[in-house]
Length: 333
Ligand code: UT7
Image 1 (cartoon, helix red, strand yellow):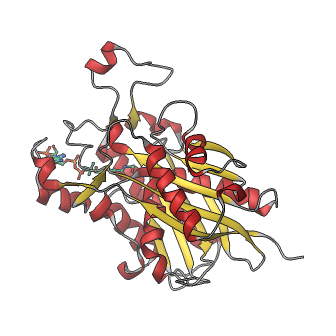
Image 2: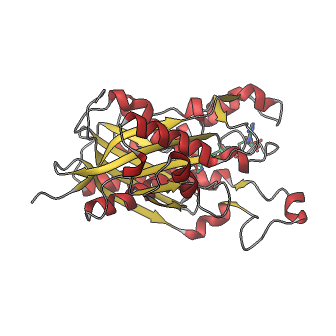
Image 3: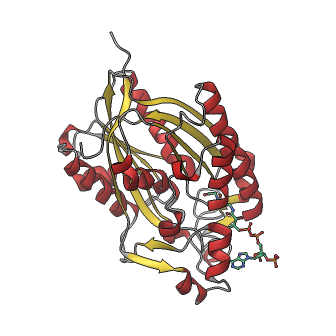
């Protein structure tokens, strides 16, 4: 009997309508369009403006669209894993809220937290449930409302992040398509360079934490940049070597969208030309768990059955990793 692999059989994305341009950011902090574009590649990002709406709205729009697009009934879904760093609330999980919103009443659901690498960690976890024949239909959604944890007075972080979500449907393949391999890593000693100081159990919210603006992303940009360049390039090269993939064998690099320069360094190390790299950072900035599925969504019509994709990410934790997968369907399936 053929080995079962976990194939992506559908992809959908969602970004909110509001466009936050570099020009608008110039009115909040001492920055300018030229600096942001040169140093990051970002021109604009999307923001979920509506009061009282959290990450589950972004995630459920992506999941709802995915179900419609793949003609899948919400009741057929066995499991929803939501990778997010910005849950609607500490509990219940955003995945539970999404499952409820889309009517996935037979699914169990949970969140997975690995900052910007979360989508890869979740995809790999979900793949195991398929490979072991435990479940047949799993949705992995990467969603973040980063604007909810950004200090728009901090120019080191507010220029980078945006809001968005993407979701994939995973199903069994007996043709060897889908997830082939994953290399996932973490190093908690990096936590001091990228974190949110307050709002967790170590430093619960108080007047003092609010006054000290501790409920937003803190990042030591240069240290994170150096670690990201090295780690993302290293792990991408490692997964290629492990699976005997030459740069010609790689059809697409799907990198986390944190900084154009990090993406370029990864592609260079892999020997992959720019024409094989998915990049939409200029439109959406860094949507944390949304970046990789949003790329797949935008490139869906160019992807062909059997294409070799390397997905790579780096983020808070530190966490990083790469997944090698074979795309499972042709455009306009
Ligand atoms: O996705 C999660 C992982 N995160 C990442 O991978 C992000 C990694 N880090 C980065 O992408 C970059 O470090 C940043 C985009 C955050 C910053 O770029 P950089 O090239 O590392 O800038 P820098 O912090 O070294 O600052 C260079 C200069 C400084 O001025 P001086 O000291 O040279 O006079 C900063 O004060 O640019 C200044 N600067 C800015 N100027 C205009 C810093 N931020 C800004 C800004 N606008 N927004």
